[in-house]
Every structure is written in C-alpha cells, then in structure tokens.
Image (cartoon, rainbow, N blue to C red; front, side, top):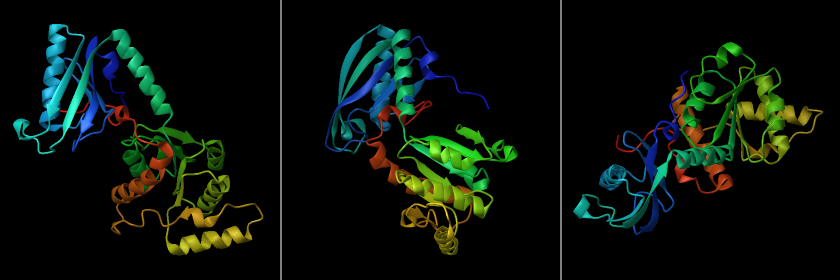
Length: 281
C-alpha cells in the first residue's frame, strides 16, 4: 500500500487559516484550522462559499508574498450562505521550516488520540478498520492469522500474535476493545481480560443475547478473576438496522464506540479531522 505524500513536505510554503472568532450559527467551531498551498489543501473550515473565499484569499497572499491577514466574513445571503453567523479567520504564512514544525506537532497530537483495538481480522474486523481509520483514533487490528491481516487495506497498525490478550494488557488506559475473532472461546478470554482492566472506555463483543448469556456463565465458572460483565456491550451496534453486511455493522459500531470515547478524549482537535487533502479541491 502506497503512503500518501504529506501536505507539509510537498510544498515550500502555505497559509495557515484558523477560525479565531465564531458568532452565531457557523459550520465549524473556533480553533478549526486548515492549510492552503498553491496546489493543495489540508483540512476544512466548513466548506461552501466561506471556504472558497478563504482559499482564494490565502492564494492571493501566497502570490503577493504577504505574511499575515485577518479575514472577517458574515455568513449571510451576501455570500450565498444561510448560517446567519459571523467568523473571523487569522491567516499566517508558513515557510518550509514552519510547515515541518506543524507536521511534528500534528504527529504528537495523533499519538495522544484514544486507542481502539479490534480483535479479529475477518470481514467485520476489516470493515471496522476501514471505518475507524477515518476517525480521530489510533487503531490496532489484532489477529493470529497472517493471511487475514494481509487482506486489510486500511491504514491501521496490524498486530500478528498468538496471544491477543497480551495486547489488552499493554493497551493504554481509556482504550476501546472490540472483540470479534473466529473463535468463541478466544472471544471470551479477550473480553474477560479487557473487562478485568477496569479502565476501558468500551468493551464490546460481537454476538447475540445468547452469546452474552454464555459468556456470563463462563465467567461464573472461571477460576480466574473476571471484570464486571455489566460493563460489556453485547450485542455490539445493537441500535443498528439489523443489516448484517460488514460495512453496515461497522458503521453502527463505530458510532457506538466514538460516543464512548468522545468524553474520554475531550474535544476533537480540529486539525486532525482531515489527515489528507480536503476542502474545495
């Protein structure tokens, strides 16, 4: 799988745009950042006519060699937007050194994101990897089957191991664990390990109410300590449509997990929402 060329190393200069003031209704919050070079865009401040105006102003700055500018935009019918609010955008020139510093800071921010561990690289596990790779989390796909891991095309960390429960023990506090291996007994071992931590933001196991009851019986008979089973989510994605296609299951489970992780992670860093090019390219 080829690695996308980084915006921050692909250009000698760019403009950093930040929403520094937001009043009333607006498509994005204060602190949202995007970057504009002569050829590319990274991130988004909300799209629509607002973003078009901002991109045009940024490229005018690059052409003129300007260092900074403040752009104030009422979001009304004058510019073809119906939000009704107002935004002010701080625009600053970044040279190659400043772009390198921005990239390093963003990498540090990504490393601080909450962790999601997916146990099982089958059809649903791979669909979950695809789904979570678009969200502000760090994803690890764990399996003991090399051939299944090889089928994953999502840009996530892959872990080939005969002892997946060791990954549970090594995970940072506040992680999410989604268990859907090819073996029910292995599911039970991994799930029990995750519950036993006591600090997981989410522990979910694929299956039915019957499988949950079987797991609870297994826990009662186990000689090893087991965490509180009431914290287990099983079935996962239970608010879904009943559609069994892996991609649909993944959509509902991703929403379920990110809802648990959001209060743990705090507000999402706006700069991390789009890691590739975005906006009005």
